[in-house]
Amino acid sequence: MHEMSLAENVVSIVDAAAKAEGSTRVIAIWLEIGALSCVAPDALRFCFDAIARGTVAEGARIEIITVPGEGTCGSCAKSAIMTALYDLCPHCGQPGLQPNRGTEMRVKEIEIDSRPFQNCRNGP
Ligand SMILES: [Zn+2]
Image (cartoon, rainbow, N blue to C red; front, top):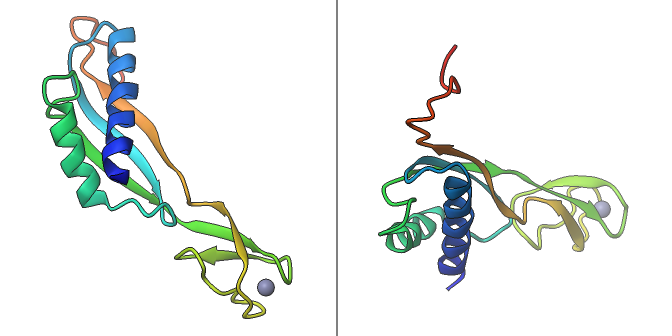
């Protein structure tokens, strides 16, 4: 299952980051998910909860940021916003848009409970 391996990946990234900071708890994780990545956010959350159990990421809040897709047309070479893979080019109507952006998923930011090494990250 696609989301299961992504969730495993996220948990291992978060786990390594928390350990590097000497923390045992992760508060929140911001994930960027491309509109063309075929990742179902609900399925990802479900898999994450299952995999994170017993790790530093257990109970962490998942914030999902959707990144719009964008591609270049193979026929007219113009760039276009894409909402799905296999979209037709809005300029010339031909298929063959090559996505440049929006197919990936990445961990954008992690909020780690860094106590007792409290810093002012949440300050004004
Ligand atoms: Zn075109």
